[in-house]
Image (cartoon, helix red, strand yellow):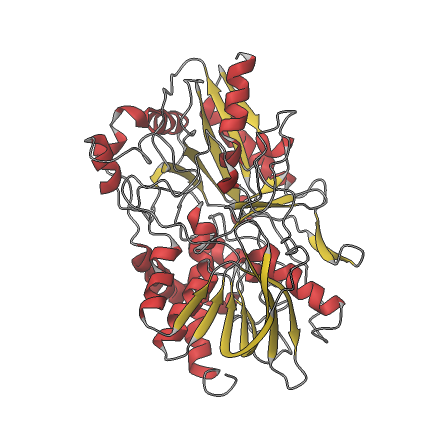
Length: 527
């Protein structure tokens, strides 16, 4: 592969592989201008608008409980031929949260004129980094969209028994599936020219005798079919959907749960509201310290919001860091000892698959069509999917992504000098799972192919889980133990894994279950 084509591959697919991120997450001071400080009272404050926050806002609103949703990012409206989202093949400031992209394999993407409240942020850790999203809808804006329900045997082996798989299967997973309107890709689309990589992957899976399944996605595939007919500018059929789907048709949280919540009239979503601290007030209520920021990160206003109930749904990194900071500084005394532990990467592994026998072609249709599940043995249960490259020259390459039951566990350590909690990840964490995913991926691609393990080069995950887990820090409804009116309803609540599936569906289903219980038992008493 030429140096130019390799450079294009590394930079052009950086966001897809989780190798591009930012290094300056903080908001900027507003120069010498005095920043006003305001106060307000609310019944419920929800920090974050992803799967956990979106579910909570909607279900509380339907029960008559108003809430304020604080989102640090912006809205990303879509529609046919929109240009809201950035493009992975031509990076711009919209890709990154208030900072500049890091260097990748000695290649540094272009610097941008000014920081911006963009989509992705790198949260640096010792041994493992987390890639997280910002914006109304959270991670659903940029996730590929795989909406997988765990099998009962893997779920029962990895999740708290009291969750009751039978009820999750009959009530809560179906509720999420209905809200996200999940569908598998139609054969008409799969048989079209740009979905050659999907067909090659399917053929290789069949050759080695592994399970082959269509992956349910929260997508109206008619949008992609319209692209084939020339009725829309391509977003799906050319793989230009790694950083959000401009055309629309993707049922992300912002256009499903959040839109429905706002339609009730009981939910206010405050964008560009960056939470800096949380604390327990002397009267037992909860205080949230917020910077209202401009799109360049300038602090325009400081707010102190007091609420009867506080729902932490800022994602694993955001929620865990805020709570650990509050605990370490005495702002929330008597937090559970397990706070910051039981963190897992969901076993993420991302490969570039280069094949000189089969031509994948260019561009490549996306986002995900097929996957292969190996769920018979819970301890090493895993899933491998094929994902497209962003628009690029024909590099005879595509992407494979694996994830599974993560056995390795990391933990956060509060650093008083930085006033931050930093992830610690053991060097050989998840080595058994990684070995199995590598074996399966190597067998799938066969001889004559090259697998480049980007996760080995840059240890990172798009699926951080844990830090405030059920049974360790919270009960099954997300109540923080010993803290009346404080709840966690996001990926932090998971036990480091979501049972060989990507986390979105399980996070949402657990939040659906939790809000049912909170509405029945806490509404009207706690808040």
